[in-house]
Image 1 (cartoon, rainbow, N blue to C red):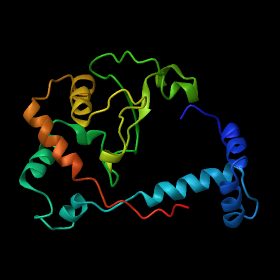
Image 2 (cartoon, one colour; image 1 turned 90 degrees about the vertical axis):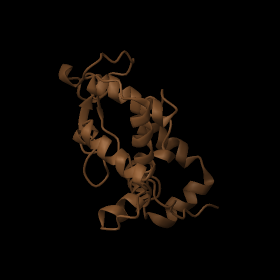
Image 3 (tube, rainbow, N blue to C red; image 1 turned 90 degrees about the horizontal axis):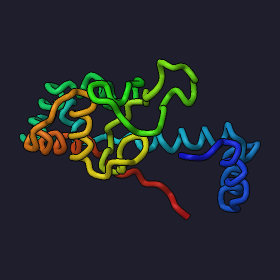
Length: 186
């Protein structure tokens, strides 16, 4: 998010609320490892059950017909090749711009590995709770879900997805939204 872990530790240490909380939760208070653990714990709390999960567990009425149609389109267009598994993504790195060259400035995974083959490779994001996670792409350059579906069709699959199909896929993606977890705020 445009920061370094070293700077994050310094920033968090300056915050009285977090200083007290970290001391309560971790015997050594605010450290890089403890911040990473806290972030991981928070992210785990965001794994929510959605209507799609109910559908997968056998409740065929959990999804509306248009959402099931969107699911079928999601699979038939090949989106499932990258957005798969329990989180519907997040399992692999993929080149952004397989079928059409992506002109963005970020070099993706290359920034970490410094290997030429990793240029423009990014972690495929989970699609769970996608309604909560806009703006889209690694750089937040797309602010609407339907535009992101169109972008992915063009850049990843080399096709223009008809607007009617985009809307159905969007309805399916919205079914991946679970109940917002209770997060205690003080």
